[in-house]
Length: 88
Image (tube, rainbow, N blue to C red; front, side):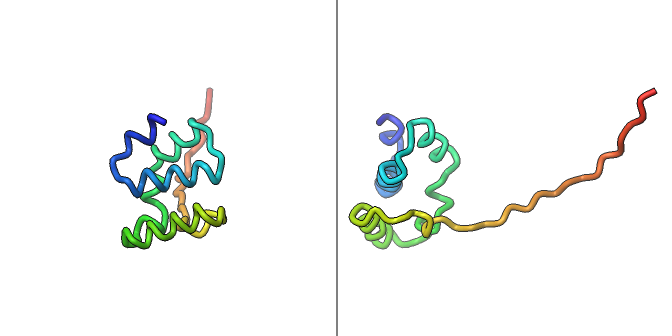
């Protein structure tokens, strides 16, 4: 895949390969995940490189759920109050 050859970091590329296979992403879904920096937003990316390798190997062998690698950051939205304009 051309998308994956454009990723310079081997661990990051390996992450996307494994997750794509486990989750059966389409090319479009993979592109969206890469563009949204999914790897950087996971708890896995904050670990030492050797730990990342071990976790990817575990994923490869067990085909377990990937949800434990994702951080849960709440999103807060701020809504402003708009005044309705009167139309004459």
